[in-house]
Image: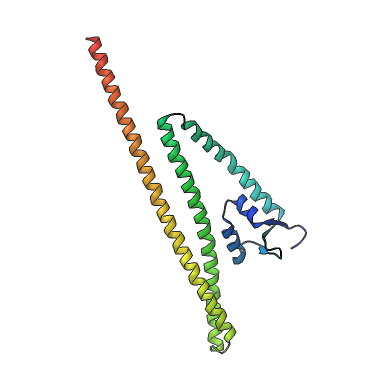
Length: 203
C-alpha cells in the first residue's frame, strides 16, 4: 500500500456504497476490491483518492432524490387515501432497497463463485498431473469444492429470496390498484347522485 492509498474501514465503505458488509468482504476475497483484514481484526478497503472521491460523490448524489421521495410520501399522508398510498410507497421502497441489497450480494457471490470454479479447474489439472500423489493438493481441491458448494447454496437461496420479494411487490401493486379503483368507483357514484339531485332541483 503506497502513500497515495486511502485506507477506509469496510463498514464505512459498505455504508457509502449502499451495499452490505458481507458483499464488501466477498469482493475483497475475490480480488474485485483491494483490501484485507488487518491485525486489529478490522476489514479495510484500500482506495485511490479518485476512487474514494467517487464513492463519496455517489452517496451525495443519492441523498436529494431520497429526501424528495420522503417529502412526497410525507405530504401524501395528510388524508386517508394519501395514507394508503404513502404506506404502499414506504413498503415498496423498503422492498426495492432490500432487493437491491440482495442483488449486490448475489453479484458478489457469483463473482466469487466464478473464481472458485476457475480455481477448481486449475486444481483438477494439477491433480491429474500429480496423479493424486500430492496429498496437500488433494486436500485443497476437496476444501475448494466444499466452499464452492456452499456458495452455490447461498446463490440459490438469494435467488429464491429475490423471487419471493418480486412476488410480494407485484401483490402490493395489484392491491393498491384495486383500492384506487374502488375509490374511483365511489367518487363516480357520488357524482351520479349529485347530478340526479341537481336534475330534480331544476325540475
